[in-house]
Image (cartoon, rainbow, N blue to C red; front, side, top):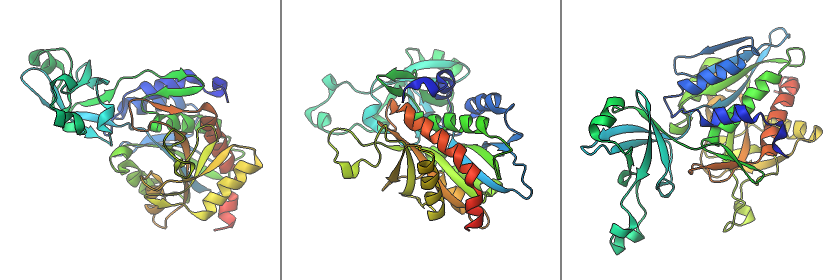
Length: 354
C-alpha cells in the first residue's frame, strides 16, 4: 500500500515528539489535543497513562481495552564532567553499536543538541578494536563547556534520539516507531469508532514506561480491568539478509501480525481466533506471529484485571527495532487500524463464547 491513507503530518508529530520512559508528558498532551473531541471521556491516572473512552449504546456494556505505549527508548543524565561531557543512564534496551555518532536531544531548561561520542578507532589498541563497546563507554558531547551545559541541564533530565521521519523508498523510516506507529494507529481507531456499531465500551489506553518493564500497563490493566483487551505494539521483521525464513518472525508488507506467543504471554485462543476470522472475513492482510523473546503490554492486560481478561495482541512488523532508525510498511500500519475497528464490532462473539 502507498502512503496515501496515512495522516503523515500526525504520524510525524507523534514520532518526533520526545517521551522517554517517565517523561511522556509532551506526547500525552499531543494525543489529548488530537482525541478530545472524538471520545466521550478521557483522564490520566496517577502513573501517567492516558485513558480515552468511547461509550457503547448497549446497556451493561463490557469493557474492551486497546493499549499502545507512549514511551520511547531513551536516556537520563547521570553526570556532567568538568569538560561538559554528559554521562547517562539508559532507559530501555539499546544495542551499543548503534549509538556511535548518533544525534540526541538533552531535555533540560531548554533542549540541547548533542552527539554520542566514544574513543575513536585511531586511538584504540588492537585488543580494543576487537571488543564490543559498552553503553558505559559512551558520552554525550553538546559542544559546550561544563558551565554552559549546567545552565540548562541537571542530573535526572531526559535524553532522546534526534531523527526526522522520512519515507525511504516505499517504507516509513524514523525514530521511536516502537511504539509511536501504534500510538498513531490507536488514535485513528478511536477517531473512527461509532457508538451505534460497537457492543462494548472501548478504552483506548496510551501507556507509560513500557520500555522499562511494562510498568504503565500494570496499573492501567488493573485500573480499567477490561473484559477483553488487545495490546498494539511492533515486532521484529527479520526478512533481511543473513536470516532464514523460519527466523523471520514476521515479514514487511504481509499485513498486521496476529500474536500467538511472546516471552511474556500466551495469547487467549478465543481472541486469536476472533482476530483471524475478522481479518479474513474483511480481506485485511494479516500474518501469524510467534515471538520467542521479549514481551508487550499484553501480559498486564491479560493478568491484572481481577478475573483476568480475554487478551491478545496485534503487531506491526518492523526492521531495525531499537536501532537508530526503525522502518515500517504503510499497508501493515493501516491493516492494524482496520482490524481494530472491525474487531470491536464483533466483541459480542467473545461475550457469547466465554
